[in-house]
Length: 157
Image (cartoon, rainbow, N blue to C red; front, side):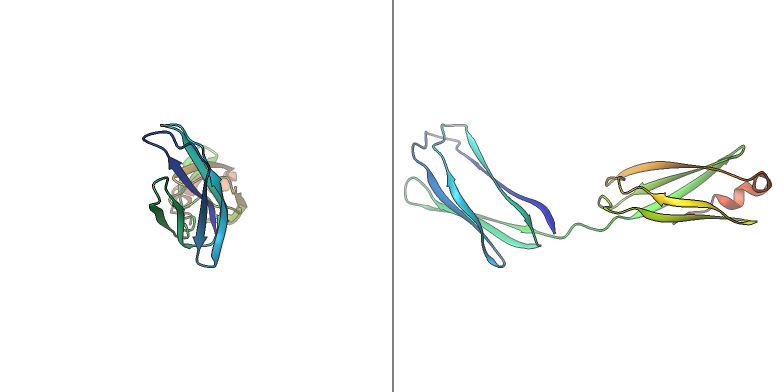
């Protein structure tokens, strides 16, 4: 689903003294309708059609001179989250930097850390890692893992 479908009508010239009816249509027909105006020169009106599935959407209305005005946008599904991880070991602490190179993730992602002596405590990468953002995870290593720390820093995901 697309979070928000928004059209903005901008009156860039003279005054629009009357309300103008509009329609927004999509793959399944009418999405929303209403009126905008009156609008003075330089004023705008925002039409928020809400959450919609992917597809082509058209906003149309009849202008003040009787001309048909319409614009079409194509809404596509955003790419999924794309998490990558790089680790670093300093003293007794492992630090993994998780980077999201895709869309904001909506649910937590489980991770595990494997060392030469088995599995260390894991957890969840929070769902709050926005697109193009990163989060550091700090994991206290066991004393026996310190001598082989470099084996823990390979890519995580």
